[in-house]
Image (cartoon, rainbow, N blue to C red; front, side, top):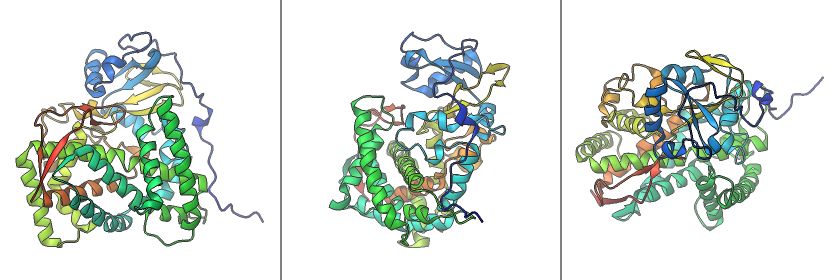
Length: 452
């Protein structure tokens, strides 16, 4: 009788048949004519969401824009487009080929898997983000946050300190690496990978790939130990996780998923925390409201922050969501069509590069009245009337696995920060953002953190 394989095999899926190069037969679709080499990137890159919203007013919900060498990308806009692509009832939109830009770094991560193969791996990973697991992670995370903030001076570079804090959390809570001389190389290599993962071919990309190789080797050495250990970090739980048939992930799959989780658990959270802190520093009234909410929670739960108490921070949660609405860390959601399809009367061929832009609907006054106004109460009072109008974490089968981890981390950081520090901008009104590849400060933002 045949024995069951101990490792989960990769399932063949429809997107395996796609050519690596997307189709260029898109000239029948409307859209702004681009420069022969730069495409529309000069208009597009400063603030993609704003440009796409303006272009939508001219061309409707289906049009193309040009990137480097004016290669056309199909933009689908509006909640109906978000629903079609993210819910994907026909299995027609490949995330794997949409995110081809990060293939070289972690080709097997869950984001880069499609259809049945994706569902198989997602089932394996979902228990790692359930409430029981999140409680364990928060118990490890909260002391890290307290210790880091105790060492912060009263004037800091906001993005730098928050990026380092989220890096520490990712490596210690997610990967189980403790700080110290033995693991400093792991810290440096992860930071190098994250800084260069979206770089075009050249020195920066070469540097990132070298760091990726060193990081994979370090994780592989650890994996042999984690397979038989009982640690509380996510890496260890992923290493020993099995499916209903008793099969486990291969070493390569575990390493790919870990690198992908470290990427997702670090940069996007640092982006959201930075914009939240800057907004709070600009608005003393909202800062006071959230501080009062945090003080009320401390009176109930004492000095230890527990996962069950986080629901008692509704205003903090609303502030987080409004920040994601206006400053989605990822400005684009890419896909590739497996088969030809139609949308609002337009024919989109197979193997077409598809782009969704969360901020198209995030700034739609039909769903968010007066969208340019920063107003957290719009989330405190009621959820959006159309679920596919608010998609900072995506929707459907590829919805971000770590969304609850990210919300927990943001609340844990703000809770400790607001209880202990008062935030003020060193240069009020002087901050600007870059939006590609991630939302982050265009230049250093200095915060004054006066001790409360």
